[in-house]
Length: 338
Ligand code: UT7
Image 1: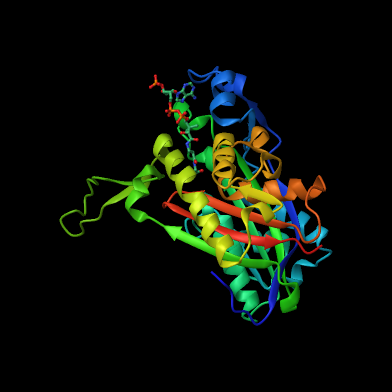
Image 2: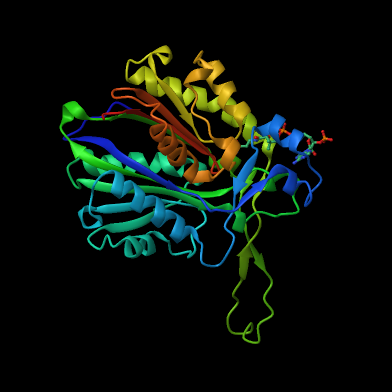
């Protein structure tokens, strides 16, 4: 999508937070029938961070990542106009963003959740950019945070080895059109394949003493389900198409990008997508060996680490793609401006 904008938007700073508790593959092999070798060969994951006590939550992780991003931006929380929390594992079905707003003291900010699973961060950055590029807001905090350890069936070896908890945040600020750093995007949804990856809600039959007056069905959310093979095939076939469409609309050739930053789901997916686009593997940003798949948090955590490692330089073009439940997938092309 080629943007028609009144103002520019650019990422000013990043921050991230993960729980202290690390679970290594060997430890998981004591819980389910798996091995370090299988997990490393099939996914690239070596360890993941998991919430360990009741004091830690999606709110503490999201707030910690946000405070670090604000500090790196030398910005007061009161300067934030809007907080978008990308999450599919809120601690309240009505949303968690308002609790993050209160915890970090950003009391002038509007705050809402955006639910789009592992594509949530990409969708949130694009949403934030619209508010800035049309002149509505100047400073937006976008947070990607998920704690899927709460929703995993820890006896299911096909999923429990994959996921970890974490949060990453970026401060996006308005700037001149010439300095615009959020260059374009491309987004997709295919709800017909929603069943491939889901935390489904299931209704129970309620035997209520009032059932002759009110027929109410209630239920609860189930554990995370994923058809790994199908989701894998979807990711390696559709993500390169999304990236190519987006780059073509911007007149950028794949060989002219500096970094490929994909949702950190599986090391094999990162390389398969890069191969299809003839992007060399030294341009792939990857840290999933340490954290596993942290859903909406995976991209901002990896971005924060790449910046801390001083990999990303001024004017570098970073192609960012998310993919996952929905099914949803999409790309945003960012130019680093600092
Ligand atoms: O975040 C949203 C996006 N998510 C993704 O993109 C994930 C996409 N999918 C994947 O990354 C991969 O499909 C997985 C890593 C989930 C699985 O890898 P796979 O190579 O597709 O394995 P598979 O599901 O085809 O399973 C191969 C074999 C099966 O055994 P049989 O039927 O060949 O005897 C599984 O039962 O591996 C078995 N298996 C395991 N073995 C040891 C499945 N999980 C495990 C395990 N340890 N943890």
